[in-house]
Image 1 (tube, rainbow, N blue to C red):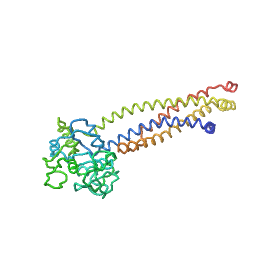
Image 2: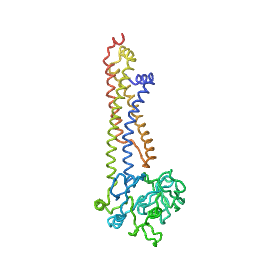
Image 3: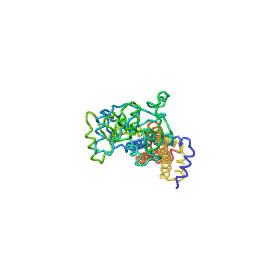
Image 4: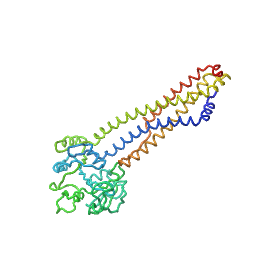
Amino acid sequence: MNPLPLVLSMLRADRRLNLMLVILIMIATGLGVAILSQERALKQASARAVDKFDLIVAAPGSITDVTLKSLFLRPGSVELLRPEVVRQLLADNRAIFAAPLAFGDSVNGDPVVGTTRDLVMRLADGRLAEGRGFEDWEEAVVGQASPLKVGETFQTNHGHGPEETAGDLHHASTFTVVGRLPAQGSPWDRAVIIPVEQIWKLHNLPAGHAPQAGSVLGPPFDEAYLTGVPAMVVKPENLAAAYGLRNVYRTEASTAFFPADVLVGLYQILGDIRVMMTALASGTQTLVSAAVIACVMILLRVHRRRFAVLRALGAPKTYVFACIWLYVASIVVAGTVTGLMLGLAGSHLAGLFLANQTGIALSPSIGRQEVVLAALIVAIGLVFALAPAWSLYRDRVDRTLQS
């Protein structure tokens, strides 16, 4: 005998309750999927964001603060690296280039970064998405998501954020956008990059070159006119040079670190949070599964007489068992599959929110972990489904018909 027609009949007869049970499983599954998917997407996006920054040299202090300031362009203050260390690093032949970073200004709330053409071309992998690199003190390159267009002119504002865009805070210099970076998937997509000499000049600091040198751009800098910087981005010749530079510049006057090492520490924190959230989600999923089975067992009391009549007409016990088990299994599978889609949608929404807040572009997806989680929920549901199926399997026909 084919149990499917009876299963479909039961699903239609109590469609509202069945839909409620599917929604419960869907929410429980979606929560777990969203947690796993979002954590993996955040790790991948943050790793991409620091990929172009091989080694950072900065003043002694919190390397997390330096990373957030230099790589993720978060507002804040850090100690300045001494000019003599900057001078030593610029002269170190183990580095392909050492690019100073300077901050302090913004354009319509977007951060302005002062650096050299070397770092711009490193971020662009040697080729800009549009235009060219800056060749003059009053030229700029913008990130992929910047509203500024190539050829457009602008003035920088002192400070960060739209609340500091009053007219008296405008710097006098006018910049022209000459190029646009490819997408970085990081806060640098909204950055406005100008020559570091100009940002030093705007803040009344030595501009890296003697005044009589004119508008000289980039290295070599004049040692007598160097100033302190929040951080230096270093591109080592090779892996051995990278470790050598890191060891040399770990002194009382400076610190050197690989941004990936900072991310490892942040990942450990994320991992602890994920374990806690996953445990809560797993507990929720187990409780939901148990609640679904309890509701099903109560619901089947209504259908107990129907199955007793079928048994009296000759239906075997295995037919009754199969009907009940397939009925519960269909609810569990439907809730889990829709929960996968709900979790992915929720992860995308969370990714959009985080991207808006941090500038880090997230790309959530369904991976092996999410599929394993869904399979585990289905397996637990199918095992729990044995309880109501076995309960009706053991029913005595005569007693059920008399009750």
